[in-house]
Amino acid sequence: MKTVLITGASGGIGQAAARLFAQNGYQVAAGYCHGADRAQALCAALRKEGFSAEPFYADVSSEVDVREMFRSIAQTFGGVDVLVNNAGIAGQKLFTDITDAEFEQMFAVNVGGVFHCCREAIPYMVRRQCGKIINISSVWGVSGASCEVHYSASKAAVIGLTKALAKELGPSKICVNCVAPGVIDTPMNACFDEQTMHTLTEDTPLMRLGTPEDVAQAIFFLASAAADFITGQVLCTDGGFIV
Ligand code: NAP
Image (cartoon, rainbow, N blue to C red; front, side, top):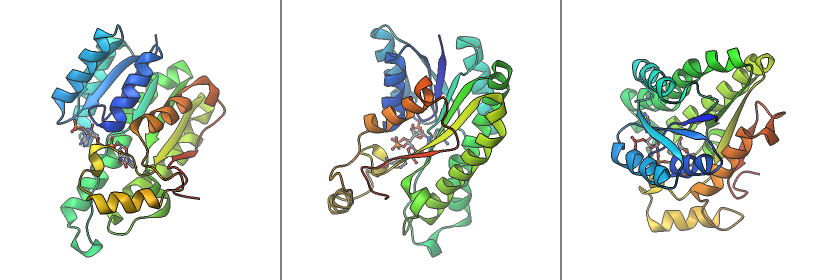
């Protein structure tokens, strides 16, 4: 049985991805940071349905936490066959109001987290000469967003990391790709008022917000054998937001 680690499985997209992988026969390591209750409830529900899922704590910005999380997963499930780097934070501010601490935190979680998790996951994948890494970027990492410069920059960094790592790991038959969601209906967007969400919906050619399940399907595709010859790519799940 293959094991998938999904960081941020306590959040909207992570929960949908955890459910989809579980339904397709994976052992699910559900990463969380502050949302222990949500991760535990998700795993309990999946186990009740006969699936294999356990929650694992790590603040992904912490190298020590991530190392310990991988050690615990190895004890419970063995090595990680598919790594989904989904944990992330966002922030809306005028560029000139962003503090050093906010800028550093954005990069520590959104880029540092990917770096730490990839570094722990890769040795097992290289030994087995197979593996899939799917990093969750954002359409803002592709196009840039006003008043989200630090978020956009961190998500653009995830794309650069993905493309470079795909080249480095290609000879080891490990695929590294990005999913770049558009506007998805999750707690991350709870900070926006109704009018802003309406405008974002109208700016989306498919005229609706994305669902966590829309993104989960793209993640699952990239993890599947159907995507074995795809690496270093950015798959936008954005209803046509970026063309
Ligand atoms: P969400 O519901 O807010 O979930 C965010 C997840 O990230 C939570 O599970 C949270 O865990 C985790 N997380 C945050 N900081 C962490 C840390 N330091 N260490 C470990 N985990 C941490 O948001 P979402 O929409 O599902 O977002 C998932 C990913 O999609 C993010 O990378 C986000 O940038 C990206 N994305 C979302 C959208 C969108 O419109 N929603 C669009 C583009 C890209 P805890 O709650 O346990 O702390």
